Structures are given as structure tokens and as C-alpha cells.
Image (cartoon, each protein chain N blue to C red):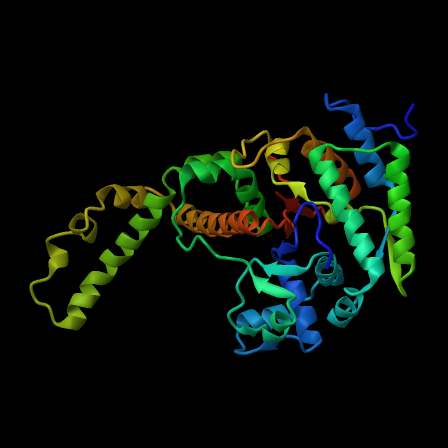
Amino acid sequence: MPKRNSQITGVILDEPYSNGLLVKALQSGQARISFDSDYTRKIRTKALNPKVGQKALEMLLLYDKAYLGTPFDNMDLEPLVRLGLVEYAPHTWDSLAIEEDHAKSIKALLLADLRRKGFKITSKQFDDILGEANDIHIGTIAVLAERLLPQLEHMLGVTDTTSDKYSVGEILGLSKQLQAAQKRELTDIKLVEQIQYSYNHMRNLIEASAQLNAPILTNIPECQR
Amino acid sequence: MPKVRSNWASHGFDPNTEIAVAIYLKEALLIPQIHTIEDVLRLRNDPNIHYFREKIFSWGDKLRNGEFGSEDTIRREIREANEAIKGLDQWKTISAWTTYISIGLDVLGLLLNLPLTLISTTPLGLTLDIAIKRKEKSYRWLLLGR
């Protein structure tokens, strides 16, 4: 294929276009389901807008290669990989932790991603919760651990129970995180979880775009304040 | 006098930019009609597709860099790209083809007046986005590029 001045050779497909390409690949025998699961069944059976799959194919024609922005663990993509059509985009940010300043800088994308997934979140809600998101996440784990500890001690036959004397949060020095979690409603905690997923997803896409010098095809909607 | 006048309210951007963007977005473009991965594999080696790709990416580069030729040049290039696609078995006409030109991630930030500090901001992004909002009301997806 001829090279261009811009040296752009590939395109990163975000959902739903990555799904659309896989459906097309399954239909033509260029991909196989290696382990059937709810997720693969969803991909196979979910009514996909035909234009989504077609758009993914057009990208594959326009660019040398499509990088999938989402891993598909249960799919065997070897035929597509062997043809040089598809690769997974690099996944450089494995953590669920949120870097606050960075998250603020891509706030528009995070809000758009959350909203396309059906979460009704305002800009103010996002601002209010972001600063404490990491603490809420860790504190929630500590709260759960605390609740599970008596059962664990009972199962292990421990008679001098630790849980009567100390809280898990205190033992681990997580008082601040515990407080952050305990003052929040369940809906806030779920929102933090979704912000974490969105941040992880968008950060990986942006970093992959920088690394590969590839644009990202996404269906992120117009995002109003 | 330019043959195309931007209908958008003045945003204080370079009028040549707006006119060029208006031409790119208003001209109908022919694209290959493909249905399967086999279609893709077959067409990837077609010289008409090579030419088409060259043109599309060249326009993307020009728009991102603010390097525009004359109105006549832009129209001629689009016409030539369309002629190349007519050399294929199947093709279709699209009017909203902004998908094919990558637009900076700054677009959303500009739209929301939020800082996307990692990416440089350009007025062009906003101009394009305004056009996209008008053109692609049903899908509103963007090809977000660097």
C-alpha cells in the first residue's frame, strides 16, 4: 500500500465498530468463537445496525490495518491477524486508579462515554465525585472486607476474633478511604466504578492513538454540558 | 469571490478555512460499496482504491495543517477521486463523509469549552464539528484523530 505524508497506516476501532468488524469476520469465517459466553452470544445475536459493520469494513479498506480498542478474550482472530488486517491496540493502562488531573483534561470524552452507556451524569456530579473517586473505590473494598472478616474468621475457626477489636480500615491505615466510602450512597459508588471503567478505556484509546499515530473511530455522541 | 460561502455564523476563523471545509463537506463523495471482508481483500489491491486513499488522506492532512488550495483545485481533486471510484463495480454516494477525515480530539473539548490539555486546539476542529452536527444528525459519530 502506498505511504502517505501523514504516515497514518491504521485506525483504532472503538465499540461498536470493533464489534461490527467481528460480526463481519464471524460471518465470513475469518474469526471463530473459541469459548462461548454471554458476551460472545451478545455480539453474535445483538441486532447490529448494518451500517456499523459496513463502516468498519470501509475503514479496513481505507487504512492498512484496524486496531481493536477492546480485547475479545473469547474470540480467535488468528485468520484476520494472519491476513494483516487486524491487531489489538496496545493496552498500556491496566489500573483502575484515576489520575485526577488527566481525567479532568479528558472530561469531555469521559462524560460522552458515560452517557453513551446510559449513565445520566452531569458535569457537576462528575466534578464532585472525581476528587474522591480513588478513595471511594479503596474504601468500598475495605468496607466489604470488614463485612466479610467475621465470616472468614468463623470459617477458619479463629476464636480470638480480630474483627471485635479493630476495623480492617484501621489495620490497613485506610481511615480516610473508609470515611469517603461510608458517606456515599450506593449510586455514587456505582458511578465511581463506571468513571473508572471509562477512564481506563479512554486513556488506553488515547495512548494507543499516540503510540500508533492512528485515529480512533468511535460513536461518541455530541456531549453537552 | 468564492463560489461557496460558508453559512455558519462567524466564529472568527480564517474565512479560507471555512470555505475549504464547506466545500469538502458539501460535495458528494463516492465511496466503494462493500459488504464482506472478501470485498475488502479484493479491493485493497485495486489501483483505484490506492488513488482514492491517497486523496482522502491528503485532504485530511491539508485540513489539519490549514493548507488549502484554491476552490477549483479542491473541487477538481474531489471529482478525480469520484472518477476513480466509478472505476469499481459497486459504489455509493455519501453526502456526509466527515468520517473519512480524522478530526482532532480537541473538538469535544472546544465544544464544551473544556480543556483537553494533552492535545493542541485548533479553530478548524470547531468549524468541522459545527458542520458535523449539521450533517450527521442521525449518527453523530466522529472519527477522532490526533
